[in-house]
Length: 412
Image (cartoon, rainbow, N blue to C red; front, side):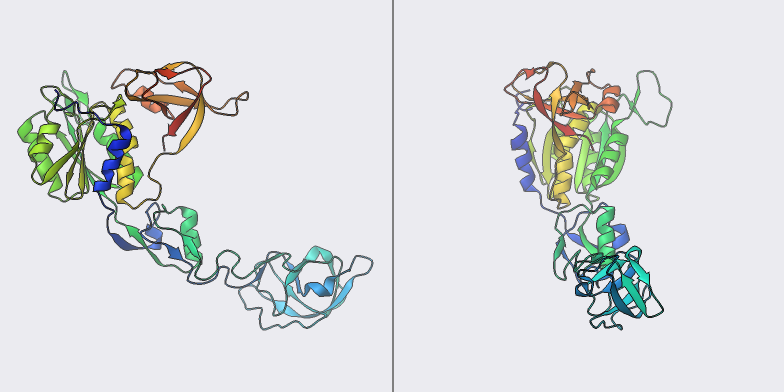
């Protein structure tokens, strides 16, 4: 028992991630890069937009030619031509007193610096237009390079690419990007009572929830889940399953169940038995996630997670997900943190950092969201579905009082 319960703080546990290094980069086509983490900065190969263009239908002008004009004293300009969509406007060079018809998105004529909206013009004949309202230089125009200048850093290393990021890169003509490889994560559930979720149960059995949950969590975090099924509470079987998993190879192994100090909890002993594997931590001072084990095999992280799915999820969000993102080279590995107000007194036993599942309510009488605890015994599923995040209670406190502010980690 003493060998197992060697608890370290959550911050000390997270520092152990420094033992692991970012995965190597790979080049992939731009359409496949959604959700991937950039392995290096991206600079604009060209300016965007590549030319100055109109944001309105109207007339491209030299702003000085419209100065002081009005509906009663219009500026009379000579129409030199028309700029068609998708054609260069630079073939038309405006001299003082000249203009060119232009459509939205059209390239400005040479020497033009602004556009008069068509609503403020009145054609007098085929070659003359009256401008009824002045414009300032740059009005109704998007300038060349207004989005990005050539050579400007547009996306930085570690950023997780979003749809709008891919759109910006497409606009710049970027065809492929360097991203960190996705970590492959082996998942093993342990327990004599477990049965696959797709089969009928025998007496005394429960369906395996952890494999499905952890698989989804890994994929959502940017990894590649490799579910390896259920292993019985047997040291030899579990050792064989772990040896087989890390030989594939994989970048991480998640072993749920068997991480506590019971007589049929073999995770710690198995990790110690694996060749070229070092034990980094065998307990973390959290509530209710104490039975958490971390070991290292080369650059592969081996996690022993609690067997109850609610606790396994908390450990995943607090530790597994950040380490996955570290392997991916992510610049921001944690969950989003917000401040909420406790809707009622939320107790916690001192000595270990507490994580209480809460649902959030936005009320008209409170600027901050109100956090309500979602209670339930270990292993219950309904609280997981109901909760929006985890309210953190300091290890030196015995709870949070009603109306008191507290930090909440939001579930993705």
